[in-house]
Image (cartoon, rainbow, N blue to C red; front, side, top):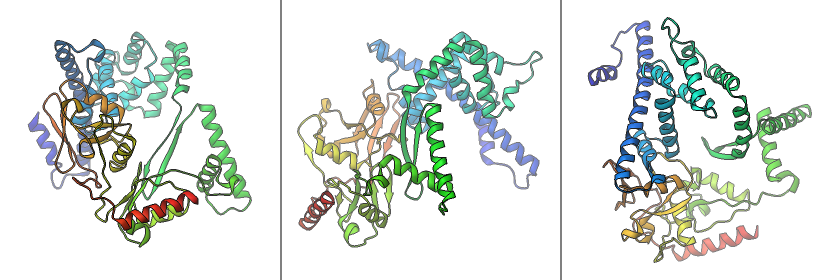
Length: 431
């Protein structure tokens, strides 16, 4: 196997024809599909081994398997949430969708195609799911490759939906009704100091919102507005949600912008940091602070970019220290590959093992990562440079690099910086 992989890694030979290059691309795609199937197989076996070990150690039945999804995530360099989904998909493929798994292992079906089938059959019984697996992915009467292999993703999704409705319409309807509970709004960074704002809504609500924005764009265009349709729709969304135009005033918001005093007052070029987004130009941050009523808490850094640290003797980090850790870690979970927002302030070295409640021994984690770290066999310790060394039950070591604002002993604000902070606070709160 390794010889074959090595030959593939060498790439196509110099002077390969166009046809040969297409063959290389197709072959590598097959390898990717097969690798996804084998990874799924290994993930299921890993969970079985962990459950057996934990059971022998007396772990309660309800906690068996804890930490496996996080190990999968670390090994595959994805977020813990993605790791849990991949593990769940693997178990479904192995136990309930053998024909889909066989297509993947043969290099004919991608992991995403398998995900679509698993998703669209999630509300069905195991028996009905196996029926769809056989009808769509099973071999033809003469062993021919099933048509599903050449379907587009939308075609595949629709084919699975039709069969699901045919087999158990009541379950599909019940699933749709239950999905309303999952409605939510999300935001994620986009390039050039922009963001993607998304909303998961019931069909009627989502279509109604889009239609209202589209209508506003058409009305603006008819009135001679020079903005593009997309710009009008985006501006209308912001205006109606924030009440910006109706109130005739700047929106009242709370946002953390971390920047040096020089960057705020002296047009310095050191980048600022918007929590939940990432680095932004200092000039952009100054404009943003002038464009809204902003509350700023402990957000000035020294010229080296180091925040002010605090410490506590209590087990639970006090609000001020928790606020500092969240800001220092950029609002994002410290686990490798995890982009989730910080929900818990966690001791790197457990408090029960003598870990102190200090900035050096605290990290911001999402809930999933915090729970995984408590599973049997997990260890972690802070590195001298602010990194975090995590050791999984299998002995694999993962290092999370320190945030840019970390330092072993951050200096306090200078008197000038402290006075500037107080003046700036007074100014923004009175704006």
